[in-house]
Image (cartoon, rainbow, N blue to C red; front, side, top):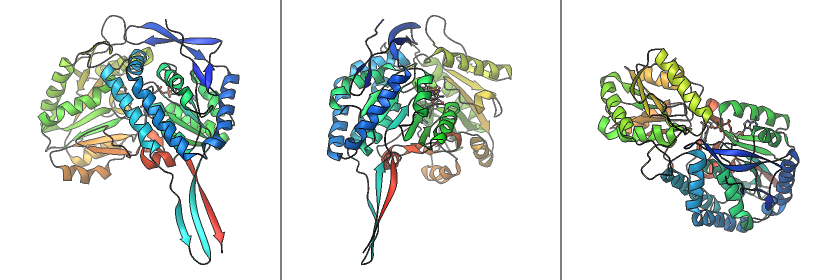
Length: 468
Ligand code: NAD
């Protein structure tokens, strides 16, 4: 049992009287302890972030240099951080390394981004310019599926904009963030980044605290709604990156052999536990059986195993709650006539392993289609007309991502704006380039991360009007 993961408050090590266990989902064993902070420690972190804000916001050059330094620290400790992510979250090491690639990419991208000043008028009588001011100390609260990736997607633009941060990762996966705090402690002025761990209650203390002017949250829709209400009391700003139920819409001109690998990878990466994983596939009835077979053969061939072992394609589900939920949704589907074409069972033994599962004879109205399964069970649904499939793809409270699969790029691009989601991909899913915004429509969120839009989300507009 490793218990030397510590929090970072006001630039120094912070331990807590209470700790909680972190479980490796591949073995079911508790392998580390993390600190459960007291309310007084949350207050200390907030006060420290408030004290650090005034000087941090003034020094653009320091911010740039520091963010680059943070990326270098991740690079220098990449293998250790990747192993921690795999042990606490379950994903194969190659996916943990990819997550860290995104982390470094975000830190370097935002280091180079400037806040704009816009001139509205500049004539003999009047000068009006519009500034972007950092909103202040931020409370950042993150989920378990990308332990460090979701945290840095907030920290990098927030710090670059001049905000200071108090971060709390998920209690299932606190270790990568705690370690990041330790590794970068000396590179940051005290208080600029405070890293806590702890339960949901710690999250509520953060959102109720008077100091943060903004809550940047990634997680479930249910928690997002609670956070929005907590923020309303103090009119704190919020960014909410919430769940999704992304449809992949295969068009009648698609070639199954060309798209099956990408569809499978984008549905089963991280064992399906990705906000923008493909969570339902709509395919023309004429291509239905061919696509189901192609996906089923990939599901049968995928090697499920401990993410620390070379050769594992798919790791375990991250925690018991998620494991139980996937089983429950699968049972609900099969009890309503769904047919399992591949997989369909939890795997015996320790750990939260579940066979990659392809379901057919399913339709809208079943929980596995309508809800976010967040696991390795993919429903494939036949359709007849384009109007019908667009209506079904959009008939949901979610609106995070969607994709269109076609051999005619122009046709796919023309159709994309008719899908109600924050991102619509054509012939890919989940891909992003630096500078691309990411966020959800409807219940999938408020605000965006990524690109200049993401950084502007950590700022407020100030107009300076000068009479001449
Ligand atoms: P969750 O909402 O249960 O928890 C997320 C975080 O919120 C945790 O740190 C938790 O401790 C904290 N929390 C819980 N209740 C709180 C409260 N009342 N006040 C303040 N903080 C509270 O989510 P999860 O199960 O960890 O994550 C899975 C969800 O996250 C999925 O729905 C997934 O789609 C979503 N997600 C979205 C994105 C995105 O960018 N849109 C990215 C990753 C995950």
